[in-house]
Length: 288
Ligand code: FVH
Image (cartoon, rainbow, N blue to C red; front, top):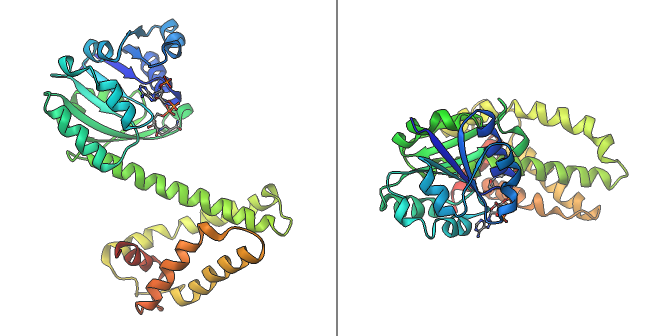
């Protein structure tokens, strides 16, 4: 097991991660580009590194939690001489191409690389509601998992470093779909004078009820069979989808959020799947 840990990047999330480590009694070194953001953590017992290179050189495990991969590159710029034998855990949101590039570059220094996706907001860190996806070096995960458990539940997905980032983006896609749908729905209801507070008791249980469709959709998606036991066929649903887009326009609401769904439903209909479940739209998404 690795004993010492550094947090590089003390924004809202990095600060929450560092606090969770201090809370768990871990020897924690911190570094941030704007040094004053480390002050409260240092007052709570964290060790201050003066440079990113020092934060990396000081610990066995180094957690990067930065805005993007440009910031990751900046933080690692001078670290070459201290990277050998270290475990880098990169919790910065990124794309698969970025993950592959950095995993390969760090491999060249003899560094163990673990990529991660944080499925939590800063206040959730250290609570049972937080979970963090990891992928990459199994040895790195085995060595660091006890320290990483201070953040929330560990989910190790496998050796391919992009697994965590792609699953993270997929889960965020589901979240933004939900939020976007909610915002569009609330704007549409608002166009006839319904306030968001009045609409909430309708939309909340409706979304909860619709979530129960997901296990059935998952089975259909994995089997490719969207035609069995159809309850709400695509032809019927596409009328509702087109009505949402048209009604949004006539009510003065931008239909931009729903238009892609209409386009995909029409594409699937044109391919001859009018009698299938709406889950079949995934096939239209897959075929570019
Ligand atoms: N906050 C959240 O709700 C989400 C939850 C899910 C996971 N995300 C990801 O976590 C990464 C960091 O997010 P954050 O919320 O901590 O972001 P900020 O508070 O904006 O802090 C950004 C830190 O990045 C540093 N930074 C930016 N550019 C550079 C650079 N070129 N060189 C070095 N450091 C850089 C910045 O430093 P400073 O501005 O204080 O000097 C902050 O430490 C992110 O990937 C989320 O997607 C959070």
